[in-house]
Length: 100
Image (tube, rainbow, N blue to C red):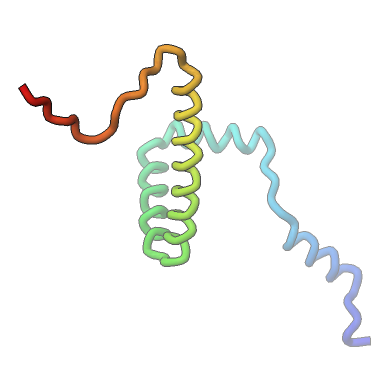
């Protein structure tokens, strides 16, 4: 009987593990606060970023994500340029010297 989990204990566990969902009212209040206190918000975000940057695992995940997003961005830009009829493909690298 001691090992049995009571029904109230299950409800408490469910409340603790329940993910947070923000309502639109909460989201708007957050945005309004950030707009009013832009400098404080930017300062706190910068501190959080600098703190996270020191964590090796975080940096590895961040770099992997950025590598993936940058590749996707380059592909998207390349497709847009190729679909543009006015786009001219130019040679890459240093121009060749002309002999005169």
